[in-house]
Image (tube, rainbow, N blue to C red; front, side):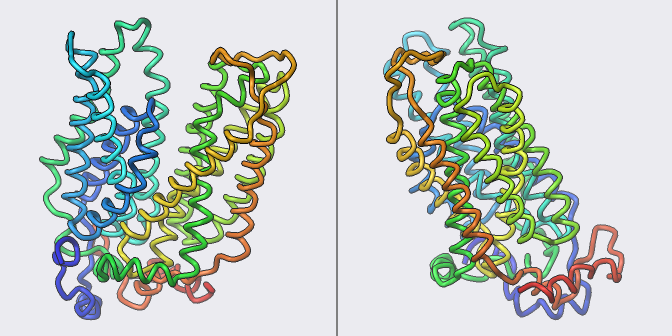
Length: 459
């Protein structure tokens, strides 16, 4: 098989020999790989923020992206994603930069579709990169950095676009600015990424990565109860957050909140989400309390979602709404990298791209269903209101849809808390073998085995 499995032939058979010889190590250039993927994810967000094309494209193309990651290899998947992202950003900008362009809408849609194709490769990559290049005590942090780069790009786009665009003539300047990080990511991907995997794996889990074929991995996942529960519940969380982000302004404007305030709530939502992800990623890398972290995080997210459903229907609650959106992001975003790590742990030795990618694909599908369901339940206000909505139509009543959204969030959280139980298969395999050798190549000490007693107690 091509890709990582082919780069490390007989990896599973050599695991015990490497353990005896102390053959696991890490390479400093793993941070370069992480930089490229993070920059690519960041730039993809800044050129995708004003379109929902990716919702349509990501579901069917996500399956192909999963196969590419686990079969072709991380290097070529990242390079392909960088090329599609850069090409799409350039094509999308042509109608604004070239006067008299024929069929500008076709070019705009084509460029946006290429960026959407790139996004599936970008979003699925952090879990794969963390597994292949990083030792066990850095995987959650690496996954967090790569995953949070995308919402960080959305945040920068929302802050930067109003500054760059004062009049319609400034739109080419904005699009040209967004080409720069996409071009830099493509340049770094082609010039600095030399291999899909390091010459020597950093851990036992990395040595056995993608030891199953794509179809065999899919069959194994369909029989994995813990993985199915995680995928459905966390995928539902992804769908709720996608709906929240898309509908936030429409929900708030009905009760007199301005679009500027809604944008500020979105900024708080992402900013505190990134901060929460950083804190939880570092904590999980230190303690390996993956299951506890995601269960507590989703419960707190549900409380914040219920609070938003109630307070968003009231007028004059700007401080409360800003605080609630901050907490919703802090608790909700922080569990995303942990969920990706947990998906890999409970499905090992299924390929990381397959395990993490299917969760996102399912989340996008659930997001479409949830958004259609929420919007279909809205009704028009019969009486005049303080609405600031600018669509030229009467304001909508979002009370029932918001309560339903909160109810779904609570339901998914309760199902995960009550039904999700799993051993940490990858960590257990690494605990049974020799611990990783770090960059300074010091011999293993008791400190490196701190997680073993915890693993033994894991259900």
